[in-house]
Image (cartoon, rainbow, N blue to C red; front, side):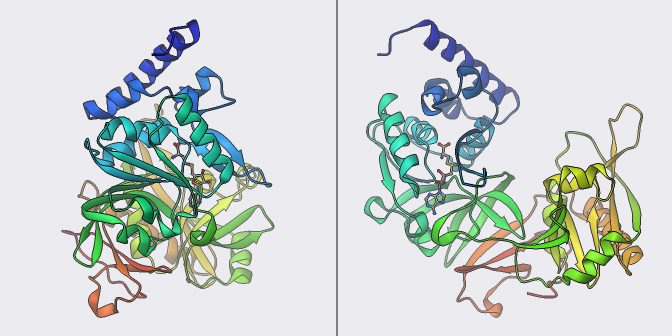
Amino acid sequence: MQEVTADSACAAQLRGSLTDELVATGTIVSKKVEAAFRMVPRHLFAPGATLEQSYAQDTVRTKRDEHGTTISAVSAPQIQAMMLEQTQLEAGMRVLEIGSGGYNAALIAELVSEGGEVTTVDIDPDVVDRARDCLAAAGYNKVNVVLADAEGGVPEHAPYDRIIVTVGAWDIPPAWSGQLAEGGRMIVPLRMRGLTRSVTFERDGDHLVSRDYRLCGFVPMQGIGSHNERVVSLDGNRVSLRIDGEQPADADRLRDALLGPRVERWSGVEGGPTEPFDDLDLWVATVVDDFGLLTATKEAIDSGLVSKSTRVGAKTMVAGGSFAYRASARPVDAERTRFEFGAYAHGPDAVRLAEDYVDLIQAWDRDHCGSPGARIEVYSSAASDAELPPGRVINKRHTRVVISWPGQRQYPNRKP
Ligand SMILES: C[S@@+](CC[C@H](N)C(=O)[O-])C[C@H]1O[C@@H](n2cnc3c(N)ncnc32)[C@H](O)[C@@H]1O
């Protein structure tokens, strides 16, 4: 039993407040996840962070690469709680966590109790050493901490009732599906056309099918499963189009287009400041053939060249030498309680593209907003077109991902 010092009393108080907040915002919904968050001392897994930083709603960055990019972190508690709720852990389960740190593995160990088994794997020896030390210091000695590239899963402890991936994945390697027990669930932050959603998958015959998905962000996968987007530079390093697939992009014509005049169109579709509209983006990414994310530096945004929406990657449709992207929603009242969606476009076809984008926003509002959302299915890369259901097909290294919107008007997948 740990001695109650001023520090641990303070940590317990901060942990209680963090958990209260996660319950109040509806991120934690089950008593089990709440109890785990009240129990595990998060600060013991965040070396170098102050107590306050450990229990803030933020990611604690634990390792950066030579360019200063974060490659390992104790994920934000909101993301961890959300994914643990998606995972639906029960006592006695066998669980594989991909991407270690220790804290999340300790939460999982609490949730599966004594009879369960937790294995966590990381590609980075520093992370593995730290996770081992932190788990031991916090008293979680039974977690298997494995150093490996998770592309091959961890066969020595398989099969798993749950596989929870805590690093951004572009694909689902066969080992993960192969090591999932019958009736198991896999939670994967999967990147599809540049957009990442934490997807809960279950097996359905020869393929995986989504049960739900949530918006999330993660550090990218390293090793065999790493996959870079194509970066088309449109204005030095200031503005770029990131393309996550084989879609064509004529860099010279798009560069000229950006420097030409801008067309603006507004849709009349409004949302409140806290209403989620990430399904609008996923839907646009599904129905548009040539899709990418427009990103820009603060300087390019401040100069007025591009919208603020490029800060997080503006969802962009490309057609030849023209492109249109979703602008930052504009306030429609002085109190800034309602915002209207619209599009900016550049290039010779700017007027048509801006109007097409606004049509899409209106179609989403009419046919999809508030619907159950997308169905995401994962087939082997060996599956033929005829074996796939209708929808947007995204070809990966090992799999063919199909996104469809059940119960809604289907948009043809013109270019599989
Ligand atoms: C966000 S951190 C994991 C956070 C952790 N689950 C926690 O408790 O907060 C992502 C981790 O994935 C690891 N990773 C990246 N690529 C990997 C791969 N191919 N196989 C195993 N681990 C990988 C990184 O080294 C990094 O430590």
